[in-house]
Structure formats: C-alpha cells, structure tokens
Length: 135
Image (cartoon, rainbow, N blue to C red; front, side, top):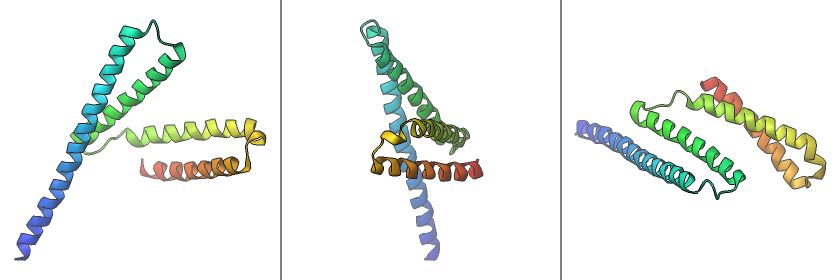
C-alpha cells in the first residue's frame, strides 16, 4: 500500500499548486478589472480630478501593471525573473528616501518613531543583502 500513499501525496501537492494558481488567476482578474475601471474613470473625469490625485492614481496604475506582470509570469512560468530586480530597486529607493528623511527630520521625531524607523532601515538592509544573494 505505500505506493498509494505516494500517489496520494503527489496528487495532494498538485492540488495545492492548482489552488495557488487558481488564487493567482482570481487576483490577476481582480487587478485587471481595477486597472480597467480606473482607466475609464480617468478618461471620463480627468478634467474634474485634482492634479495630485491624478498623479497618485497613475502611480497606483503603474504598480498594478507590475503586479499583473508578476502574476502572469508566476502563472505561466512558475517564476518571475524580474521580481528580485524590482524588489532590490524598491528597497534601495526606500532606504535612500528614508535616510534623507531621517537626516532632515530626526531632531523633530519622537523617540519611539525614530527608533522604529531606524529598526526598519536595518531590516531593509538585511532584506537587500538577502535579495542580492538570490538574484
């Protein structure tokens, strides 16, 4: 009977992958629908929308496009070659931005927030080091 158990385990693993991909497809559909609705809204109402809000929405759309591409690659190929590169870029950007922010504002920050921000920066450095080894 051991061969039946191995077969069962193999099918169970495949079901998990199928379930994961089904969730990815659902998430992909949701992202594409949100992207499409937002595009339509921008086309119809861009003349009455605040410029700052338009900039925010365009950034949000760009992030959705990255997520759509990421999910597409995961579903189609089982991996996303650009994922680590984008993650490294994002962490480096956040590190730099926060360092500049701290340089200019640490004297105005309360001790708890300053401490947590510094801890977050350390975590980002660790993440960056780990991701650079993976990519």
